[in-house]
Amino acid sequence: MNDPHVVALIYRIDHGDTIDYSRAERLERDEPRFRLTVEDNNARFELKEHFSTEEQAREAIANYIRIWEFDATLQYGNPDSFRLEFVKSEIIDRSPSPGHDRVSVRLGIQGTGSAKVTLSVREYPAPPSDIALCPEAETMHQRYMGYRQQREPLPSMAYFCLSMLEDPPITDSGNSRKRGARKDTAKRFGIDEHVLNRISELSSTKGGANARKRKGTGQPLTSGECNFLDRAVKAIIRRVAEREHTRNGNLPVLSLSEFPPLDDQEPVRA
Image (cartoon, rainbow, N blue to C red):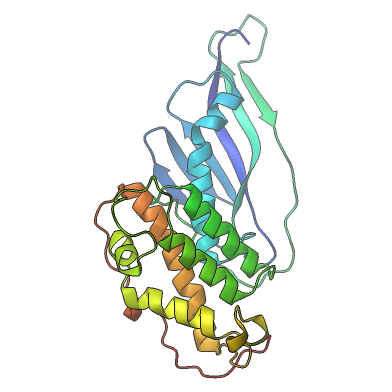
């Protein structure tokens, strides 16, 4: 090609057998650098800027895709619920030589869907505009997904995420504070201290066979407590990403009222 120009990049929504997007409605977004259309399990990024190579174009939207996958998998609590796999690029020659085609299509991976489905959704997960990724958020996300894949017990995962929240890097703002102070953590992230206290209590004193500490081995978590820990950890992971986006701006406080009550007292067997 004499003057190649990448018009669009096409990605396929890849997912495991626990979710079905076949009934999801068309999703459209007009972003500063591209127009996004999601339909029939395909995401089309129509680029507004000039890129002469597929590699340059993909790099330009890579962070957008990472944030989208981060938020969608956190929303569903499943690392296999939403992944964007590159399929092809649409490239034109803005100055084609006589007798040569103006359009070129480069293919990426190809794949097949899965047959077993347990959740059918009406909407594609929307790309978030209120979060940004940082090492802390990504590490906590990885640990949470490990728990969801049964690679780690709930109590240890929850306590790890709480510890990371309370013991941020030295480079974080407000270095004069006492590191790890729960009240300071609650203030910085806009999380009611009672939420953090409950995560700490449940992950430290209960768990049955999966307990972090010996004193918790005789006290299995109830289904209500498991549900609370799961939801609360997801919320604080997202809050870390929200704070990264706002750069220390004010955020609405996460309170206990936003999480399920501990009504169900049926112990969960390990």
